[in-house]
Image 1 (tube, rainbow, N blue to C red):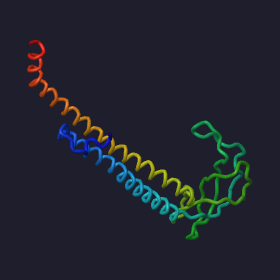
Image 2 (image 1 turned 90 degrees about the vertical axis):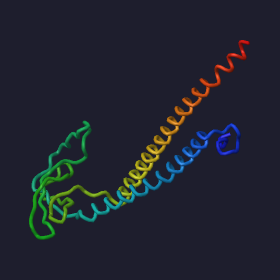
Image 3 (image 1 turned 180 degrees about the vertical axis):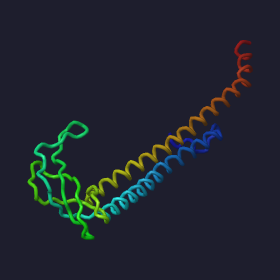
Image 4 (image 1 turned 180 degrees about the horizontal axis):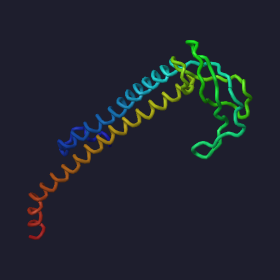
Length: 188
């Protein structure tokens, strides 16, 4: 039943063949385009996260003051497991830096913590580990593939809607021509 547009049929119109091609091309592009977009996006995300990991370096730092004992409320109202405390570290070039980073609540001054720095010695966020990066890249790929597939499907659906409107307009014109002939036969 679904392949009726492809079979030879005297009632099949040109618009039926056009619609069949639209449906076929839409689904091919949804599947292939979505898969390709997903793979490209996942690869780009993976490369970006790998570059971020390559630029960040773990450095040992020392707390310069006692860390606060109570954790801070986050923007969503929950409590964090860490607190911000002042630390001092030595950059790869030998220069000493200070800044604020996350530490255990109530940690004593002099406690060693690990901070992440860029090549200039400035603090940066900790990069995602390889497993987290893989999950993020995969999620990015799935979202990109799904979005691409949905966009292609929407365009195909809009083309079919336009084709249906055109087909209905053609039927209206045909009925304008044929309808009066039927009325004469039915009343006579």
